Image 1 (cartoon, rainbow, N blue to C red):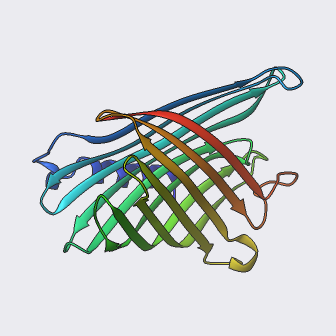
Image 2 (image 1 turned 180 degrees about the horizontal axis):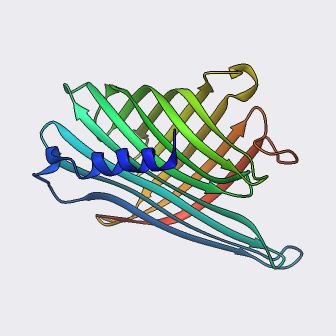
Length: 240
């Protein structure tokens, strides 16, 4: 699938006539910074957003993304940008259909850039402030440009779980896992992205958030790269 086709479909979803009535955007904006000096001189900055907008009773938009930039001993060692857009078509309180599109750039993992377009199902096993669990199943098509000047178009089956649970008055555990298996050569090319973390509520508008992210590729995207990347992030969160 050509890049222009993916971008055109994403734009069509965004500006669809179904989106004529909209509630305010709600969600979370996170910003974090860490610095280490001494034997290792390292700095890392991260920005994250996770926003939703109820367009009408049957349609909800989701916007989320992440940017991480890091330097160690005077050299850049992390530079990742990821953004996703999801249109959720609500069938019932427990079931939804979705369309998604996204962009990823992570040269240290081998991606010069990746564009994706997909569709699937959401299943809500539980909903609420105390605990929530959502499963997803769908298909994705990605256009991938790698840092070794090669490229590929890949069809994927996607599976995911996303949940949270309150374990104290002001503390909540969050986690997610997403598994992707390509249509061809799935035993050697599957991918697993996971996150586990905790959120501590400071007040009605601010949280402190800690996350551990891992991205595993059974076969590295580019020769010489590692199979797994991991990031530990601490952020201050503003709740909209």
